[in-house]
Length: 370
Image 1 (cartoon, rainbow, N blue to C red):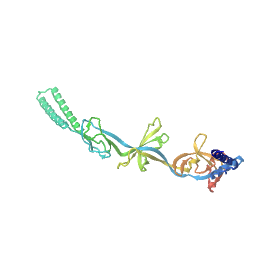
Image 2 (tube, helix red, strand yellow):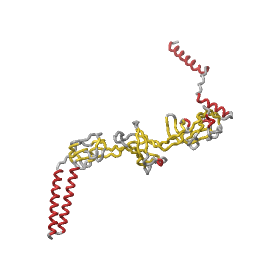
Image 3 (cartoon, rainbow, N blue to C red):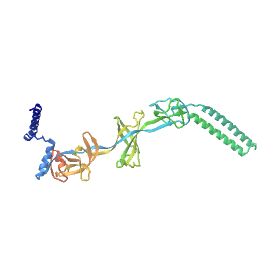
Image 4 (cartoon, rainbow, N blue to C red):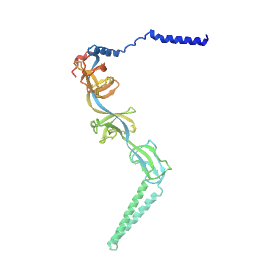
């Protein structure tokens, strides 16, 4: 017999021995999780015609401030692209990105060229028209000037005044100034560029006050009031406070939500535009219980709630409303002041069934009737 055949035979025998060992040596039964003991006892009791055993805990309500929490974003009060109104070469741009400017500060300056000469020419034309008009009035007193000639002189005088004003405005427009105090967010012109009417010099944003914009559902919009103070936290972890200054009257046709605005003081410009913000509106104190979300159940209508035990050890279902989420559980309303909450075995009992509750303390005798 060849060496390869002997090796293959040994491997095959080893595999058969290993596979056959499972038929003669049973695996040890896995240990049961302690939390399942009460459930098995309840199931056995129900099968024997006895009340199912469940584990319950007595919980009492606490005073808790109900908050409406919304997700929003910070937004500058206004952002403007400051544009040139006349054509010409940019001869100066004294600002840089990120600079704070005051209302009236120079952003860009266009070459004056002959605009100052045009102003002087218009001033001279105005003086000539004024002299001619005054002369016409003197001739009228002597009966040597018609009313038509006087009206023509008056028209030339007004036209000269308008022309002077037009030339003065063109000269003033060589200086592109900030329309309000803010921050230069972006620059679009450099010294030497040729500006045309409508060309953007700089983008200016107003950061004081800062706005926080959010959307609220139609079921909660009535709880908000203008002038109410609210607290918020930015995505950077900064706590801010503001005042509700706008609550929309028209809902979004797709989301059925209403826009709201909160005004926040930002004199130092430290709050940036575009930050994600969690806004908390205080809606008053309520009595609430803290429970684990693992105990939530649904009734036949799909309403969320929990199962409890009343004084006669009958299972009850209470609809609840979540008002706050936390690391130790959620705070809910809708339960009696003192409640015997089923914590283990609630999946194996139905509403109206008599059960045998097992408590971890002796306070169950002080429970009021739900």
